[in-house]
Image (tube, rainbow over all chains, first blue to last red; front, side, top):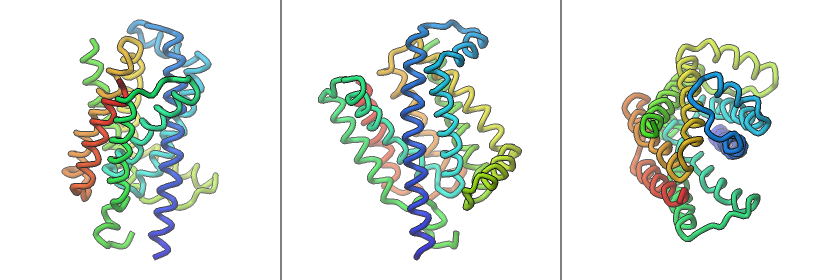
Length: 137
Length: 120
């Protein structure tokens, strides 16, 4: 069925966009927040932190994440999108190794295998419950 | 403080995701990805009350998480925030009436255990 195939391609494309913008956004945000240190509890301090360059870049990427995540949820199940986009934990671990030279310990490798197995399992279900039940989309 | 922030992140993320899903489902599948069409879809979605609630909850989740990572190590903050997967999957089944079969439950369980290991 071409409609199902298109939906699968669209789901993969938007899942990839959601995952990459999430990983990059969170990495930049974390980097910025670590540079700032403990900023206290005032909401003004939190808003002020948004003007830090790394934090700002992170926020822009998280806006991309928000929009692609919203588009994805317009046709795919939350119980599909949430676990499938969890592959971002694995991407983050590899990005840490690649860009920050972080060591991937045995514990981390175990986690990578477990998360990948979980994502693969959920990825094998149909993205939308209405498609699974054979209802027209 | 640490645990209060964890609770805030989990609750706000769950509310944010569930309401975002409700709102986007109400809007229907986005087909047209030309800039004008995306703009008008965004305009419609921005007026959807579920999406508005979701966006507020996401903001709470975002700021709570930012605060959490500034006072607690990532090895704690990341797996704790991932615990939102459990209430979200439950609500997806009960409230959103999604077909959450054994593969989705097993997948979520493997991911949660995996996230604990990855964060070490």
